[in-house]
Length: 431
Image (cartoon, rainbow, N blue to C red; front, side, top):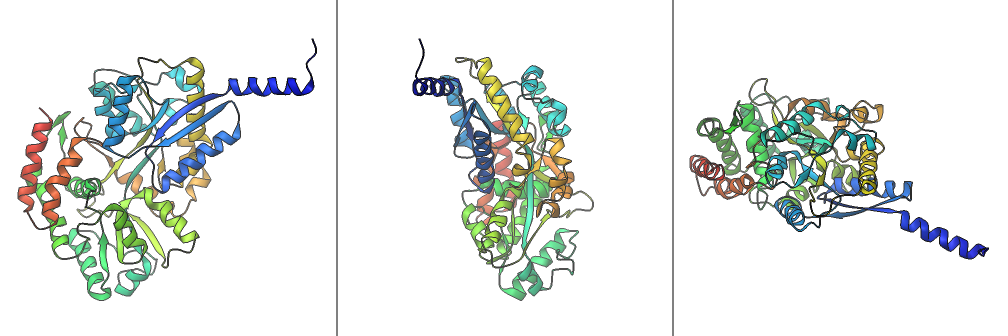
């Protein structure tokens, strides 16, 4: 029987539609880097017809990881998701993650050695600590804490060098003096740091100050509280003093903190490098009325530049009730490969330091602005969160920091009291 051309075309289109593999992808990128991930997904979907990635952005933090765990128990997971390296110990403890095998990686033309070694090593350590082996996520990036600064305000205050950078600061006293000068000479709030309903930002600053003094919270794989009464209290006291003296914002939410800086009402902003696209896009749209710069968080205790950092991963949920088919796995790995290979520099445009080594080595990344202002120094200074299930995004420590440190920043409790309550919370979490 001969088919009419129109019928044949219809059958062909139907067949093609049936052949398409859908990949359900959850992420938590709601900021400027979310626009970059959307661009990567859109470009991937437009580049071929065999696979369609269906992206949904979920709420960042504890709600995301709670939803993932619920989905794993119900057997109704996405096919692929983003994850934080810092959340991996807890994810392994809950059995929410599926390991990537060497054969899995080969489906996308990838090897574990394609990715930044310290991130892969941390994943291996997490697996070992959980009593297993394997690679339970593929690192997309390193992201860290940086300083955004308003060149116009800093120039007015006399703390901007001829090279367009902040005058050197080598100690807490240097930074405090700079903040005081800005306040006195310009009347602008020196430093925007969100602390209202944002324990993560408070943790990142406190932990960076703690790390630079040589503090540690985990020794030999176990929780260690020894440094909290000295280095931990000193770090919190610095933040409390800045808050009392009006040198940092007080009781400001995350969006408000970003808005204060981008509106020129704060001279500097302490935030993650994921706000780089916010600055780039605002400048491109002529919405930013000042020149800005970005620098790594300064080394304030001698030569130790250690600064809080984390890594975004791509991970597969451990769905034991509905095991992924070979066709779906091939589609997932094909997309993961695209994100890293074709999408690597787009993702770096989100402010992140890419973990895929060929992207790191590319001329496009090495010349990327404004990333070159901080990326090399920040990469060396980046220190990941403690590899323990009570730490990390979505973990209980963030809530404990918010509950116990915020009153200190508001002048309602002493640094000693804040640290004492944190110690009690950590001891309870570790039981």
